[in-house]
Amino acid sequence: MIQLFSIRKDIPSAYPFLLPTEVGIGARKYYAYDPIEYAISSDGKSWTSCFDIPDLDGVYCYRAPDVQAANYTDNLKKVGLQDGSRLLSTSYSTREMKMEILCEGINESSVMLAYDALQRFLVSREPYWICFANWAQRMYYVRAKLSAPNFYSEKVWSCEVTFTDLIGLSRSIGTSLDYENTNGFGNKTTVDELKFTFSDNSFKVNNLSDTIIDPERRGHPFKLTLDGNSSGNMKITNKTTGEYISRVGTITTSKDGKKQQGNSSFNGKFVIDGVRITLNGKSDQMQCDDGVLTLQPGINEFQIDNFSGKVTFDFPFWWLS
Image (cartoon, rainbow, N blue to C red; front, side):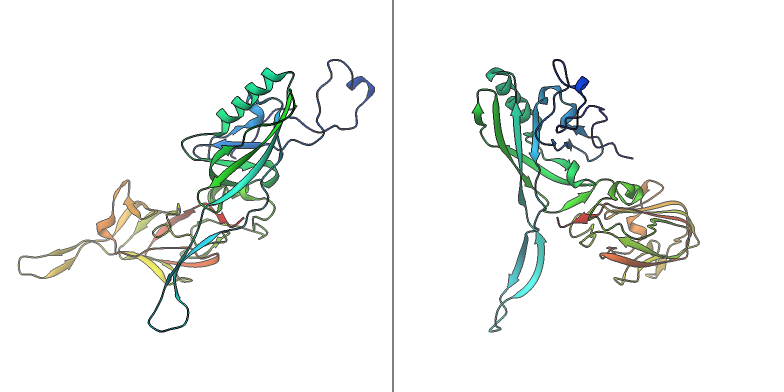
């Protein structure tokens, strides 16, 4: 289980019902709103919460980004005298998300330092992943820009943080192998059972994404691992898309010009990682054809011929919002 947010027991919160003994000097500070926790990560695995940065005490998000609209860009071509244009391809574009921050300090110097700490936490030359507690189990690949602080008094200010979502889609936190991290509202995990590890040769893989998983043309992370053995001519087919990859063996040419098919049997771990194929950690590209595998949104039916062992699908899910 990926640890996203703070494990503090005293996370900032709005005023609850308080007992007389819980108010007065030395009492815990509460706020007029429930601060929304957010966390950032450079790799999508190790996360740092805003609540775990001491310099950000009193600097809290009171409005997280709204549900995002997907922006797409069409590649069009004008064909002869035909009306309109022909759609060649579509890709999702970058988009902006806005977060509102409120700071309350003890004096002017403290809130100026707080703004500096917020900028240090969020502003970076390199993009990073960010997630929000009120829209959990999904993350965005962003860079941040802060507006100048708007002072209401010498010790209270607010500012707007604008994130540029560089991918234009949200991604699941974790992958299909730890999909419990994606069990959130709106993440399409209403099915009774989700399986991504199989021992049969015919099975169904559920792509919970709103989009196709395409490692070759769209650069989506995708790893298919076959751990077992084959007597030769193994073939992996996505019957839903009609795509396949075959391990046919290296074709050699003898001195008399005759082409011969090499031995394509194997025993070990055969891995398709994106567009790279390995067997037991060594490149196996030359033993395979030039096929490609993608996953359509929803159910994908697979058939694997001439293989016995364990099959594992490891990929993140992608959503429009």
